[in-house]
Image (cartoon, rainbow, N blue to C red; front, side):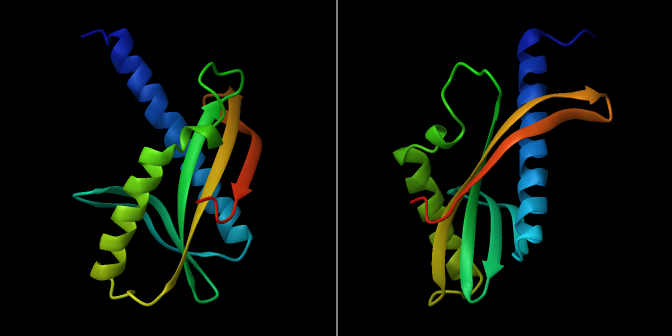
Length: 135
């Protein structure tokens, strides 16, 4: 069976999203963060990355866009609705992990990516911007 255009777009979007999250994790670890969870899910939504730095819980929303995209920058895509969803999901995360009294910070990692050089490297990072305390 031949995949349709919608399936190909979804697969590409998922692949570039996973690439961005992998790059964000690599970057955070290089900066001294400890990764507690990736793609943590509950009924209210998903947290891309939950990390720890010093005594703070850092919830990181990762957005990846292709260079030259038509829909604004990666950072601009974290709108008020998304921020509310991340905050409410974080409340559930903190309760389930008994971290009620933890200091929490919400960061955004915005990645601009371009096509890579071959099948083993389908994307490459053009820019990675870490916005601490983004919301």
